[in-house]
Image (cartoon, helix red, strand yellow):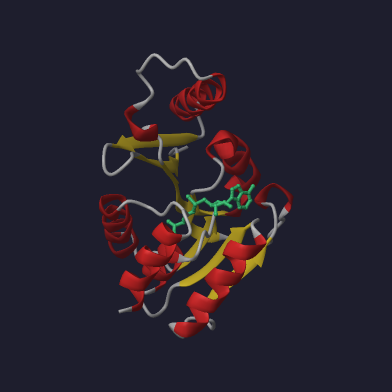
Amino acid sequence: MLLDNLVVQARENNIPIMQAASLAYLKKIITEEKVKTILEIGTGIGYSTINMALEDDNIKIISVERDQKRYQMACDNVTKIGLEDRVQLILGDAKEVSLAEKFDLILIDAAKSSNKIFFEHFAKNLNPNGLIVTDNVNFYGLLNEKITNRNLKQLVNKIKKYRIFLEEKKDFTTTFVDVGDGLSISKRSDE
Ligand code: SAM
C-alpha cells in the first residue's frame, strides 16, 4: 500500500515524518471539527499531506516545502495516489509565501526554530473558528534536559520560547497535547 511505501521512502531518505500517534490525533481533530481546508507548512515527501487528504474526500490542502528534492518526491507521491485535484504543493520558503486563501486548519511542521514566524505569518489565513496545530512541541523530551551542544541548546530554547509565546498569546487559546512528540492546538480566543 502506498502509505506504507511512504514510510519506507521517508526512512530511506532520512526525512522526518509525523509520528503515528500525532497523525492519528490530528486526523481525529480533522473529522471532529469537519475541517475542509488545510494549509501545511513543511510537506516533506507528502506523508502527512496525503494522510490528511485521505481523511475526507472534500478536504483540500495547500502544502509548502522549500527543499526541491522533497517537493518533487511529494509531487510524485500525490500524483501516484490520485490526489492532485485536492492537493496543491508549493515549492518555496514558507516565510516568503503569501496566500490569500483562508483555512480551517494550519499545520506547522517545518523548521522548528521558525515556529513563531510561521504562526505570525499565517495567522491571518485562519478561518474564524480555525485551528493552528504545531508538531514536535515536546521536542523529543529534550526540553527539560541539560544540553551541552550549542546548536541543539539554541533550538531547544527556541521551542521553549515558542511554548511561552503560545501560552501568553491573548488572542489565541492553546492546548498542549502529549501525544507523539507533542502537539499544540491553538484557537482564536472568544471575544
Ligand atoms: N509534515 C511532513 C510529514 O509528516 O510527512 C514532515 C515535514 S518535515 C518534519 C519538515 C519539512 O519542512 C522538511 O522537509 C523541510 O525541508 C521543510 N521546511 C523547513 N523549513 C521550511 C520553510 N521555511 N519553508 C518550507 N519548508 C520548510
